[in-house]
Length: 433
Image 1 (spheres, rainbow, N blue to C red):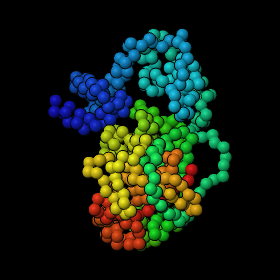
Image 2 (tube, rainbow, N blue to C red):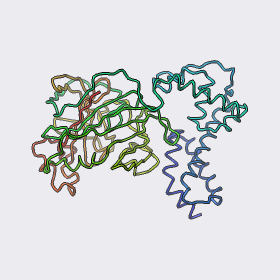
Image 3 (cartoon, rainbow, N blue to C red):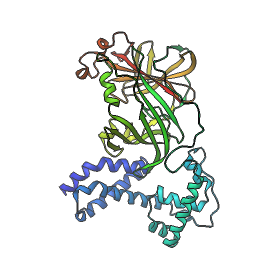
Image 4 (cartoon, rainbow, N blue to C red):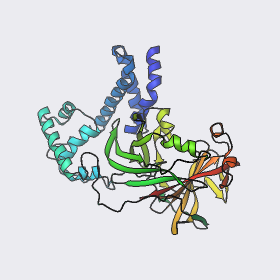
């Protein structure tokens, strides 16, 4: 009993995240979890390898989730060959859903049962009451028809019209921010937190970090959403992020040197799986190559994932719909927030002139939601795309690493006072789509 409890406590977070990611946060999810734990307890004496406890109990959770889905459909008529075509879900413009919608109901059903509900061919045979050989034949046909209709090649590449290659400027263009005495508009921002790309097939992006006060481009990433992907049964998209070569290393006394080296030293490429679902965007997995060694973490890996890639309870993600709630207020360089309120809010409407181009934007402030000791400003246009992103460090942020306060390291840079504490402007980010 003690051994089971110890193993369950070590893997409980992963099991809960898996179940809630598939069923949602509800009483049903809690019921499925309790059924999973009971079945695991009853079957524990037969588990041969204690090292295999986590994948073993996740397998039980997967079966219990499948049972739950089947129970939801008991009152519905089983789908058969005679059912008419149904329309695709409205508002879903992903390439996968569009391709599925173009298939027949029978093909669509076979693919959803196998890839989304993760049923074996034997389980599909029992569910549809047809021979297993028929399931295999129909599955092969459905796959072939999906491949023929899918607008992206099987290797994950993207068919795109060739256009002139875009590039980031070597130095940050001059910009000005004028706060408007006008209501801030609400916006739909589908970008992934910290990486600016929208998790939708076909999206591409160049973005870079600019050192201040030198305004020099320090790190640049070439990103693309390359195709559909799945992590622990959750459907999403695969994203490639390649670090572009730097023209020159930073000076020895540049306060950004250590951070730049830590961010891209040896990291030749990142691979992410992410999704937009239920009004939120979230990462599902992150993998990087460091000196030829691949390291992968997923949303089931606890703090190892959540500290860098997770956001919200059980990795619910960042909400897409942003509206000004008044929980964060800004008056010039002074920022205050309501105690206990959400740390992200629109703080006002701005006229942003960047490189001679004028933008109507709202400013979204993040008060240490993503990284303790840091504050950010994100200037979004009406399409919900980042035009400019600015980072500020609390004056004593990482003082053990850098040896000085940021007001000493970057005395020329802009300051903010946030809830009575000093923050110093560190660097900016620009995006090119």
